[in-house]
Length: 220
Image: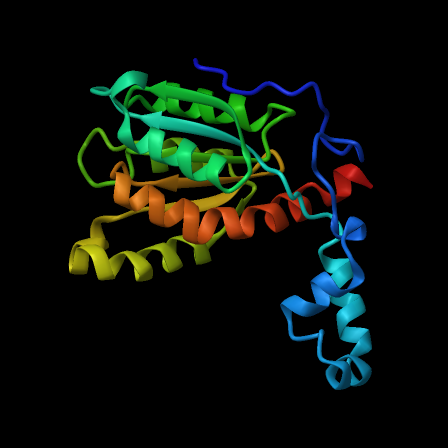
C-alpha cells in the first residue's frame, strides 16, 4: 500500500480539510451554473435557485480519492493507468488518500475496495483493471456485492464517450459505478486513455455532489 495523503479528519465534520458545501459559496455561484445570473431569470425563478443551492449544500469540494489498480502483472512503479488517475485527481485540486495495487483475485479485490471505502479520508474510490471479459477479469463480480446502490448512468455515459476512441469494441467494457458504505465507487478499464476519460470527464465533475448526497443522513 502506498499512502499518499492521510488527513486527520472525520466524515461529516464541518471543518474537514478544505471541504466546504454550497453554503460557503457566494450566492450567485449556484445560480450561475443554471443561468440564474441573469437578472430577469432570477426574478422569475428565484425559488428554483434557492432549491438548487439547497440541493448542493452537502457537496464535497475537495475529494479524497482512493486509487485501486487491479492487475497481476503490474507494480506501483509500472502502473501507467494508476499514475494517470493520480495525476488527473491532483491536477484538479483533489487529494489521493491512498493508492493500492491488488492482483486479479475476487477476494483480494473485494477486501481492498471494502477497506478503502470505509476509510474516513476517502470520499470516492476509483479502480482500474479487471472490467473486461477474460476469465481473470473479476473486478465487477467482486465489487458489486459491496454496493447498496447502483449508478447505471455512469457505465452508460462512459461507454458512449468511449465509442469515439475504440468504436464497437466498447461492448466488451463493463465499467460501472455505485455506492458502497456511503462512498461512490467507480470501476474503470485498465487502459490509460480509459481512466483519463472516465476520471476527468465524468467522475471528478460529479463525485463531489454524489459523495455529499450519499452520506447526507450520516452528517445530519
